[in-house]
Structures are given as C-alpha cells and as structure tokens.
Length: 257
Image (cartoon, rainbow, N blue to C red):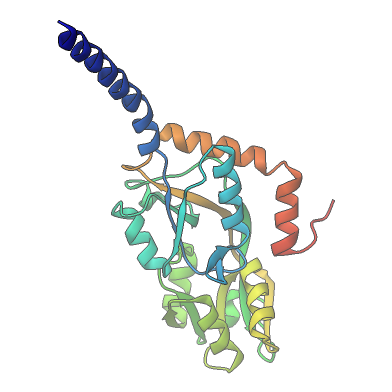
C-alpha cells in the first residue's frame, strides 16, 4: 500500500514535470539563436575573435530586451549565408535587403535595422556624373547582392561586369585601376576607405542606385511570425533609445540633432 502511494506520488510529480517542460520547450524552440551574417564593416566584422559592428550590436541589444542572451553569430560569405538560412541550417541572417523572391523561405520584420543609400564609387581621376558615363567601362559587383533590375540591365548591356565575393576586393581593384567603378553602400564604403587607407577611391553620391532598408531575415520554417513581430516591436523601441544613438555614433560617426 505504501509503495503504491509512493508510485502514485512519483507519477504525479513526473506528469507535472513533463507539463512544465511542454510549456517551456516550444518557446525555446521558437527562439532563433543560430544567427549568421557576412563580413560587412562597419555593420558586422570580426575583431579579436568576436563578431562586432553596428548591426551586430543592435541585434544583441534587441535580443537581450527579449530575454534571449545565448545567440551564436557566425560569419559567412554573403551568397553562402543566404543558402544557409534558406535551407534552415541557420535561423536568421542580417543585414539583408527586402526582396520578394526570398519570401518563400523568409520572414521580414516590419522595422528595418537601418536605411541606407547605395551609390557609385570611382577612381578620383575618372569621375562620373551619371550612369551614361559608365558605358563601355568595367564595373565591379558583389555576387549575391540585390541591386535593382534596372541597374543590372544597364551594366549587362553597356559595361563589362566583374563579379567578386567582397566589397573590399572591388575597392582594391578600383584603387589600382583594374576596374572603373563599383557600387557600394555608403557607410560600408567610407569604412573601407579608412581601414584600407585608400587615397584614390571617391564616392559619387549624386548617382544613387537605390535606397532601402537592411533587415533581420528569419527562416520561415524555423521562426514563428509572432517572434518576428515581437522582434520588430523591440527593435523600433530600441532605435528611440540613447543606447542606439551611442552605437550609431560609435560605428557611423556623429548623429545630427
């Protein structure tokens, strides 16, 4: 009789424990902690064995505000990173453009990490004032980047297109005259000029290819829409904080009032 009572109590405790796990595990499983990005300073870069940068620190801050502190971040070349998140071997990728062709495998938050212009960069001895000036020229692009269809049509029709894996490669080729122009996001381009100590590469801000948001891209099968919505809400709140202004000034320079 006593053993029967003990077994009954043990069964009740086990059932209660399993119920507790059932309430906890689904939430944990929906927390996308396998994060990836490409090497794209000042937004994401590796320093002393750690992934840092403007986007990286923003993501960490927003995750912390959601009670998630165990995320892992790994660097990959951009095209490979897209494949990894598309196949579900990672939960989320940043900083990514919004494109409709990714919607079958991706969920985008409503709020972008930031908005930025993509412009033409040239050698200072060969400035241009319009896309027409690029006709017959060598233009460097990065494999896997989402430029506009109009820009692709123009350069494929009128230019010699050279594809590489990194913006850094294009900027070095531009410095030494191996290409005539490239396209890069403005903040990343300025960072490359400083860190590579390039003296002959100049921006052409009047030739803006596009201006759009850069997002946290979540794998559709791994991450629920409710999590994405909550991330978007917390990100929007964070961007109104003094801490966000501090990060922006740290990586991009002084922020005008």
